[in-house]
Image (cartoon, rainbow, N blue to C red):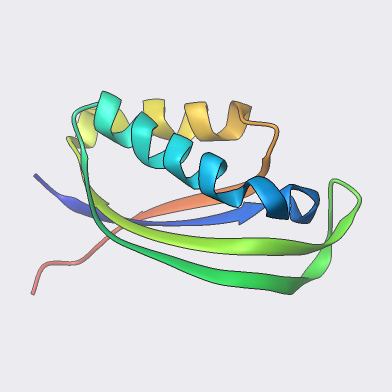
Length: 95
């Protein structure tokens, strides 16, 4: 399966429930037949411009593998989550 990298900007007001949000993200990937390779919580950072009236966001990076046909569905699911301010999924290049 192809590998992808996803960067999430999570609402800073949800800092206390970050574990539930990130486990929900990995659960959506697993439910769609993917597997998580690596997770990194980059913590709270200042945004370049306000997003949904927030000047800060919690950055969360995730490396995962999934079927290419599921990526648009995953992206749609993440964009519907009110706790996620922004998401960007990119394909990792082969070595």
